[in-house]
Length: 409
Image (cartoon, rainbow, N blue to C red; front, side, top):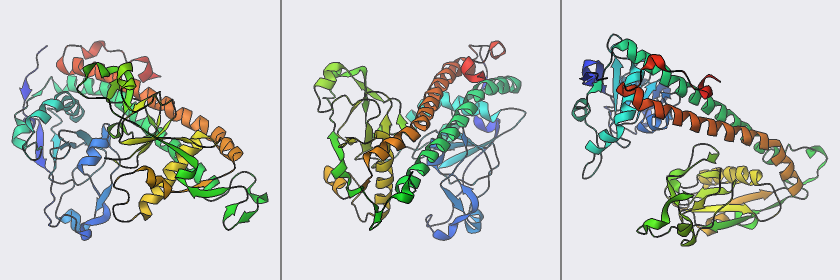
């Protein structure tokens, strides 16, 4: 089935965001009640923008504008052609183009899904000598395939069912992860662990606990990379973790690259078991994740394991807490990269090992739920992405679609 292609400005209103004040980092522009959406907020949204890192004040709003809910945000600098729909009124800068659909011509959800199909093409035409940039002119040169608006809505309903479930799961994951962190802080920061009333505390440290550095209590292991020119080292079944693979959740489910057995044998990485704690040492520094399956690792990361017989989930949350605190108090370039000696200056509190195991038993069901929800989302993404090109091209008749079991469950 062939549908006519129309430029975006024939389907609704299109304009760049506004951020006219100079300098843009003027503190008087920020801290007010108006959400200010930046390219990173668009990139990290799944389908709808439901959270933001910055807000505008009245002064900020005065040199910008509020866009309505359901505006499609399209990034044109830094991150090219990432898209998401506003869940609420918000401002954004001129590095984002806003599209407000004419309801008689287009469904904004359908347009968003079409951009998912053509994103790679938009990125290719945006490549520049110094910085990638997607101009409005280039954007309008790409037509949007337009079935009747009723068909657009039917297609969007099917696909958005997947994305709504993904968003629900992401919110559940965030709540579960927050619960695990709160329990860690209650037991090991506020020192309200089971039986704390009867434990003697000397100089702020419960009897039997030890204080030192992360290096004192954590084994630090390095990784390595096989020669990139050796094709038989790459494309195998062994996930190869790098800082690019760092997730926003507790677990990393997969990696961009994979090694063969000969690739693993040729590099300085071992195959680390499931639930190994990874920390990124360069690039995006200090991101911590658990391996959801056995993985190798490159030299820009470290793997960590308990030196003593204490619980690994305790280690994960303890390192996360210690590194976040260290980032806040570190000065200068101390945390621009991590080396082994960095762990010698990161404070670490080591409780009795039996208490860490009791804590691990307590949080293990939370981590299991997080892992299950992440895997469920992975399956939902795969199912949606299989349907996406077929529905958006008209290859598959939307009237014949039966939602998959994982969607209706």
